[in-house]
Each structure stands twice: as structure tokens, then as C-alpha cells.
Amino acid sequence: MTGTGQNLTFTAGVKDALPICFGYLSVSLAFGMIAADRGMPPWAAVLFAASCVSGTGQFVGLNLLAVSAPLIELLCTLAVINARYLLMSVSLSQKMPPGMPLWQRLIVAYGNTDEIFAMASTQTAHLTFPYMAGMILISVSGWLAGTILGEIAGGIIPPSLVTAMNIALYAMYIALIVPDAAKSKQIALVVLTAAVLSCVLTLLPNGMGDGWRIIIAGTSAAVLGAVLFPGEAGEPK
Image (cartoon, rainbow, N blue to C red):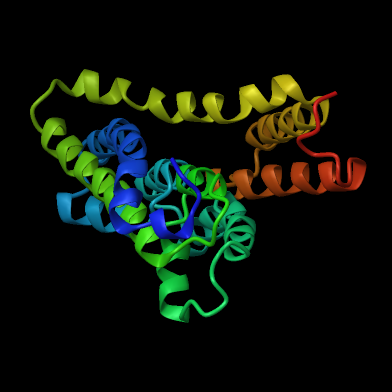
């Protein structure tokens, strides 16, 4: 993979995103199967996946929809979960040509997932729109294809197996936090704080919804980490 602007073509973006596409297929397949099990029609699952493009956000959002959570709770929860994309987009914008039109930047922002951000960040030259469009197109295509296949499979395989796919959400959480928490005491403390707060809020007889628990626990832990360890997040200790 090269970093010269001349080589950051649409085709290069497609090739670089192929591993991302295959990875998305497995995760979105699980999402589609669970969506079918929850009674979500294929068109709604695809619309949800296309508008969110966030594995964690979609799984959590699906759970909130299943318990008829209020719309404001759903929106606030997804906003907190996906807040990292704001920082990632700001970082990625520094690698784009100064003259890139706003509409192109908006498309890049839409498809700026964790994996695409990581791939794009390795480039040393300005990120061209054709290159980013190629990565986004193949990645989102894999995401939507997996969702559709999951919806189809959800209507064929036994319900017990579909229900077992719910573990995909917890596996995703573990895969996201354990490696960083193992390398950094600061991150481990933030994760532990969020987990403890979530357990406390769950045990309180206040009828608080799952979404609000995520918002309160996640935001409180993040604020605590920012106050106690300013500028130290991610530094192994």
C-alpha cells in the first residue's frame, strides 16, 4: 500500500477496503439475524444499517427498539456511543486537500468508520476523494450485504441459534475494550468505572431505561478519565 497521491485512486480504495468488507460481513450478518428475530423487516434493517453504519450503535439501538425505548433515549444513546466519530472526522479532515468540496467531505464523514479511519490514517499523502469513495463503497456494501443475508438466514435457521447470536454484541464490546485496557491502567480504570456505575444503576429500583444507563455510566466514566488523566489516555503504563 502506497502513500503517494497519484496512487490513491478509486481502485486502490476498493482494494484496501476488501479486508474491511469481509470483516463487516460477519458482524452485519449477526445484526441481520438478530434484527429478523426481533421482528424487524428487511427494509427497516437495511435502512437502519445504512443510516447508522456502526456495529455497536446498531446492536444497542436494536435492543432499545425491542423494548420500545423513547426516541429521545435512543438518539441520546447512539450519540454518546458514536461521539468518537466526531474526533476521528476532525483528525481525518487534516489529511484532505484544502480544496475538497463540502459535499465530498460529508460523504467521507458518513463512511468514516473505525476501520476506514485506521486505514486512511496510514497514508502519507493527501487523501483523495476517489480513494475514500472506493473504501466507503466497498465497506458499506459489505455491511449492507451482511445485513440482508442475516435477515434471510434469520428466517431459515432455528430460533434458538438466532437468539444465541446476541452474544455477538458482548463479544464486540470485549474485543474493543480488553486490548486497550490491558495496556493502559488509565483506560482500565475508566472501563471499570463505567461497568460499576452501570451495575449500580441497574440495581436501583428507579425504572431507568438501558439507554439512559449507558449514557450516564459512559459519560461519567469518560469525564472522570479526562479529569484524572488529562492527555494520558492510551499511554501504556
